[in-house]
Length: 394
Image 1: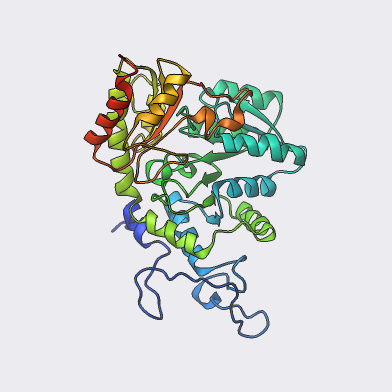
Image 2: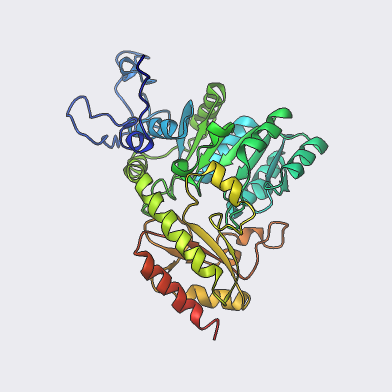
């Protein structure tokens, strides 16, 4: 008996949700830059005959956004995706759909600064409590849940910016044993390197601004769910609050996704070379990269990731002032926030992306430097970093 063929990741990235336009034959989905749609009689929504939910108003549904959502659903192996105006909008909407005042959420001890700010400064006022836990330690997560039940266990793997690794399958089991949902921020890995839903997670969150878009020209977010019921709840809240991705933003993200696989291969290979070089440099005190054998999460990362990604962080041996100086000495690594684009970026997390965690239990080291390794020639990137570090080791 012939087994059913399953399309590979790159095929899905190019074709899922992106069939040629039935009217014109255009091979790229059109940008439906439209706010409203003609109805075939009252309540007769266009698009239902094609299997869509029907279109009435672009806050509720838009064909271009729908194409992106269908593509991400296929890439993550979910049941439904909602595309948002930003990753933080996706995170906020998920919490409001899944939680109620009085609920509690576990977040990583080294969470992204924006995630911490959302829970600490916004959602806490709505009555949702949080606790930071070392997600790389399953026993610590189990103990935290035993002490106080939680509605959500929210993890990043790898984390931003310390690149800690959580065992997604193990944490899914721990969360489900207590009735909690496991949410995985998959931004650093992308669905090409890691598919959390297949490992037992309930929800995947993305800042599509990063690797999915891939070209530093669009801001967006997405939530992919395993359960259709949760997807309906999420869609209701999104429509009610209006935090949707615009058609052009959705189109730009779809364009980026087509090359996600080949880009992630290159990001990962170059980042491994950068991490190897930094690990032996006298000006560097410590390197954080899951592809290094010395990384405490290396074995888990190797088990659940295809490759180790394009993000590398390190601590300058000369301390905070030297870390700041290194950020100002590079030529090809541009000093800027964000990550995941074709160009390489360098930043000082304590004063930039993670300034919101200053003075908290999640405060990052002052001597930390974060790199987003781009698609430039790897030898050129290594030379740029060696030059920036040279004065540190004089």
